[in-house]
Length: 113
Length: 114
Image (cartoon, rainbow over all chains, first blue to last red; front, side):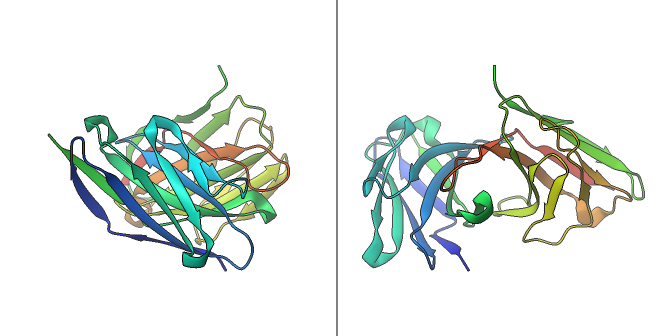
C-alpha cells in the first residue's frame, strides 16, 4: 500500500524567505510523485510531477522538488516566498494501476509581510 | 477552452433530500474521479471511472453513487442527504496511458446538509 506523510500541517514564512514543505512517501514500486496547490475555494492545481526522468523537478511559480530515494522524500522548495504563495499544498503518490493518487494531509502556508 | 466544471459550487440542503452534484469535462479524458475533502484535511477517493459504463468505488466508503453514461459527464448522487455528508466534493479527470498521469481538478462543490 502507498502512503504519504506531510510534516507540519501549518508553515509560516516571511515574504522573501525560503519555503520548505516536507513530504515522505511509502511505495512498494518506483513512485510517481506529485505536488498540488489549492487556493481557497478552488480545486487543486498541479505544481510539479516526478516520473523518474530527473531527481530535481522544476514546477510552476518558481517551485521545485527533489526526489531522494534513500530518504523516501520529495520535499518542495521555493527560494523566495511571495504573498500569492499563501495556500494549501498537497503531496501525492500515484499508482499506475488505475491512475489513482493517494494524498497527504496537506500543509497550509501563511506568508507574512 | 478545455476545462472541468462542477455545479453547483455551493449547496445547502435539508436532511433527507436527494441531491446530484454535476461534473463535466471538455478535455476528452477517459478517466474521472470523485474525492471528498473535509476542511483542512486530505482528499479521499470515493469513486472513479475508466470510461463509459465503468465505475468503481474508491478507498473511502461513501453512500453516494455515480454514473458514467457519457465520456464527459460524471454525476454524483446522494439519495438521502444527512449532516454527515457535509463536506467538499472535488471532481477530477485524467488521460489514459502509461504511468500515472496528472489529474485535473474542478473547483469543487461545498455541500452543507442541515
